[in-house]
Image (cartoon, rainbow, N blue to C red; front, side, top):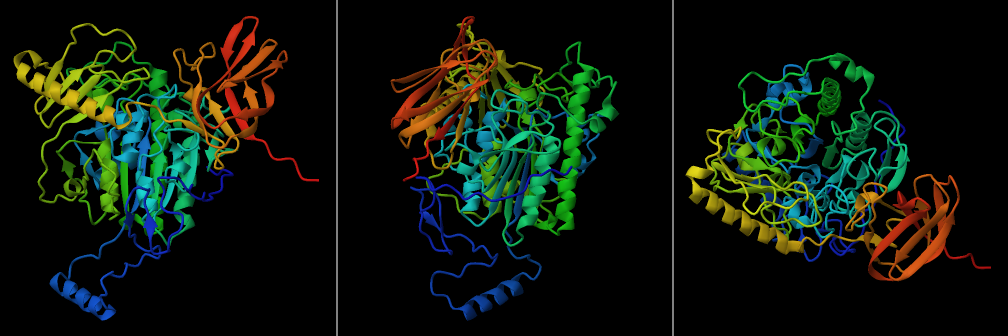
Length: 634
């Protein structure tokens, strides 16, 4: 599993939301306008008190505390390993009743952890990732979909990585980010000091460099393109292990975000071999919702092989924590980002990825912290992705910036089985295609007892005048088999009003206005724009579609542009921004052309680029923007 990647640390960008540029080693600042906070020193010692307390007083106080509770362990700030898989359903675990899929290490992790009986995420991956990083509903953050410029998180959102970095933690992400590929939206702009990630929503998509695959993938290492060696899930795990071992003087936060078992279903033969020729398990007769008549065997085999590979990599990571003596001091959290993409065993739940029914949004979630969280504990209270950032911040004793308003709650009291008042609450879920979220389209509201569902409208079609609302009693009908909406119209009405208030609330944060890509940032030169973030009426996920990038030129001047397009006939390439247009000839069979000395004016605008050929006009593949270097003085 060796590859040529070497861990290096990127210096965090100074931004308006970042801590002040001048600070003492004893203080860290969270993003303005956040208040100054006092963090634990990086040497692992406790801070001195700021009220003039003498050292001898501290000694006496410590002796008194020891005498009062000789069995108490000293407070410790844990390392954190957050593991998330991509399109792994609730049923894609041996622990959850799948007799075909062998996941011994994940099953063992589940037994060693506290686990949530009902844990919820977004119907698709970007929404879950935004909530996971911020503790807030994705619709607040600018993330409303997975592509076409709708999966970019506003840079003023405060991530858990930023909070921990401001409190002495080393922070690293390895795998899938999917919240923006350009400054100021990248993980290295959002609190991660080390980042090895693929672009966009997946390897092999339009955001990826041509020719990249799950084997020897071309990744972004701290903002620079780099070809790695090995299978992608192995590469991410190798990099995470090197990051963990690189510095033992400070606690670490590792976000290991596998892009498997997401399509394309590429997997090493060694992992696929045990699953070749299987007849996919369909569950026991009468056990929840039946699967479609046809469940593709080869697809299921490949998914199971990809999960088995993840299982082995999680085992490698847990074994290394043991070998380094870090297991007891590390909080490990495991979850998936949404339900399965393809039809296969999913514990009898209704629907799959993209749906607000249980099969799309209920996933496994385990939390292990030896000596703090009881192994085998089952948490009955429902929880969700919006709760994990508050939970991690709480576990790490990191002060929450006053200007940060979490939608979620810390789950630590539930995980530690503390006697705590836990008021009932309702969680909300919504996703559909389109630039702007629409009221009443493809949503669900889940209270402690009931779940209201209006599942129509995922695709951009006209909704019927009268929506079909479903209501389920989740205490007795967790698989959503009996619709009781007709006999409880008052509950439907109450939950519908609650959903409408929630929608108005999340809309008020940014009015669903997308963030802008920064051009001319000293943090990103060159900047590579892709069709992943095209926006417009007919946006360019496919070559024949057109669109443009919402940009902000923060450093005006002269730039050289490299236009990358699909090989074909001769014609013209054209680029346009803020009234400035350039047109250049392209040769027969070429893949790139260059526009030199393009003047970028300051401010916001729509950057467009396209290729004109005799057969018609098509979108480009990528646009690479280089700031022109001043000519050397003679």
